[in-house]
Image 1: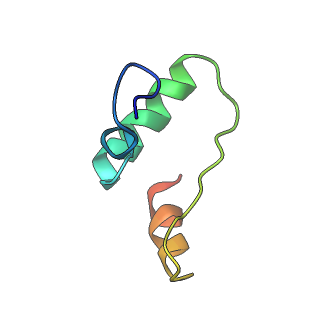
Image 2 (image 1 turned 90 degrees about the horizontal axis):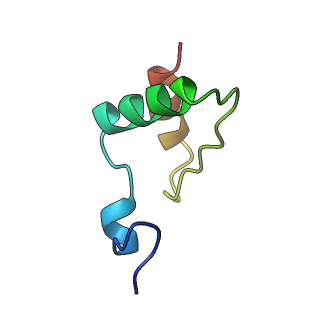
Length: 55
């Protein structure tokens, strides 16, 4: 299945801290005030990894 720019869903996932920081900077440069981040892991401690990346 193809989504967005013709990428498979798995290829569109942001899976590294560096990629997430880059994506958030790009959204901010486009004028985004908010971003909704969803943790797909069943381990709730994973949310702390997201929090560590935010200012």
